[in-house]
Every structure is written in structure tokens, then in C-alpha cells.
Image (cartoon, rainbow, N blue to C red; front, side, top):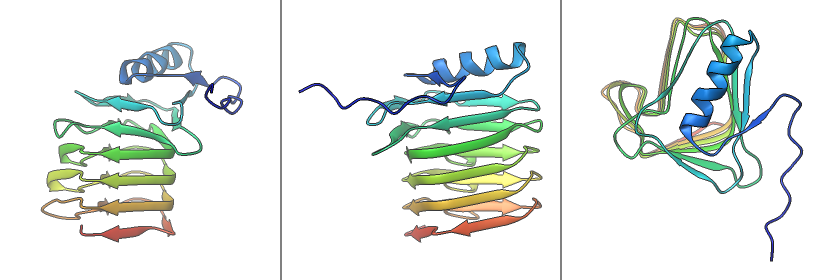
Length: 177
């Protein structure tokens, strides 16, 4: 049987299959002075050997749907490095085996708002702070239905959030962090 049809893309949303596709969309969006909005097909697995960086006054939206997509740091890299006012929206994504000094999967310092919905962090680790995610000196932080399991760090096994705007956790869970 053929796979089920994908949901319609949001206008301006780019369909991506690799971390490099996400980087390319950020570069195009920066050059065109617009937001970078990407969709990863459900069931896809993206392997990261280095992170995707966003450092400008823009929104980086990365989403999937249904069962979600898996972003794998292969125990060698975190997935996102967000700074310079860049805001980040993540939806229907599973972060596994991310690794960094700060933020095993997501590192945000001096970023805009950080929002996540229907995300999970499993087996991510940071040698310093924020096994799953690290957010400091940034805007508002909002997590809706986020789960953290088996994430480790010296400080904040699941997440480390410090000196930001408002912080909202709705349906967040932490297990063995």
C-alpha cells in the first residue's frame, strides 16, 4: 500500500529530509528577510553530525505531524543552536541521543521565544547544563506536552532554563532525568 498522504503544508513551508535542508532554508530565509518554516515527514529520521544554527531576528519553525519525526544526535551533537534573537518553534519531534556541553538537543542563548508542542527528549546529555534543552537570557519559554526521559547533565538533567521571560509547562513530564 502507498503511504498515507501528507498533511497540506503551510504556505511558505519547505519540505525537508536532512539537517542540511534545514540549514539551507535558514540561509534562504535570512537572505530574503523572512522566517524559516520547515516540515519533516512523519516517520523520518534525521541524523545530525553537527547542529543547525539560527542567529538572527527570525522565527525558525520545525514541525512534523502524526507520529512525528526523529532527530538523532548520534551521541555526538546537539541538534539546534539558537541565538541572536532567533525564535524557535518545534512540533511533533522526537529528539534522541543528543549531546553537548550545554543543551543535549537544544541550546538557546540570547534567543527570542522558544515554544515546543508534542516533543520528546530521550537519552540526551550535556556535560554542563540542560540534558535535553538549555535556555538562558532568551524570551518566553513554552512547552506543551513535552516529555524528557533518561536525559542527564551536571545541572538540569531534563532542562535548564535561566533568566528568560515567562516560562510555561503544560503537560510536561520528566522520567529518570
